[in-house]
Length: 174
Figure 1 (cartoon, helix red, strand yellow):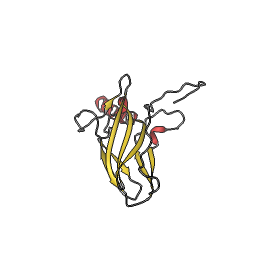
Figure 2 (cartoon, rainbow, N blue to C red; figure 1 turned 135 degrees about the vertical axis):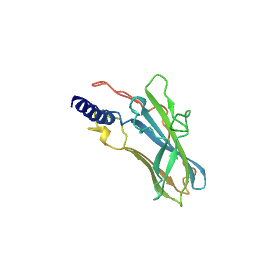
Figure 3 (cartoon, rainbow, N blue to C red; figure 1 turned 180 degrees about the vertical axis):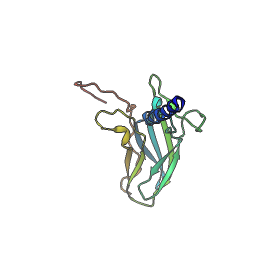
Figure 4 (cartoon, rainbow, N blue to C red; figure 1 turned 90 degrees about the vertical axis):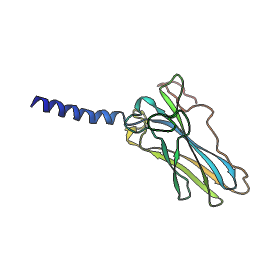
């Protein structure tokens, strides 16, 4: 009977370990650049916690909503291969994070305002100003406006990594 109780306790404990290490998204952005006509190259960049990327949450592909009623799945295109992905992202030196880039092309049907978005249920846990952050979908979006008077349209890009740590009662600038 002790053996069965021990095995049961071990299996029960593993359920909680899986839950504790099932999140990893720390930050991200969606950028785009016009290739020609209404065709754009879109890049989803995510920053992930390497210490919490177990249990199949490290993504070889990410879903994208193009904003025109269509969707797709974009492959990760940076970093060396690992046992599960053709590209496994790149470690950011001096940190426990990695940068992941997912790239695809899409042709829009015409002029208009399009919200390009991505949602992934694996947000990092422990964000102090988002209660139960690991239970809230990690969501990023970017707005593309195609208009003949605007000319070529590309998105702004972050100059620095958005991985920041702020201190209580101290000024914080990014």
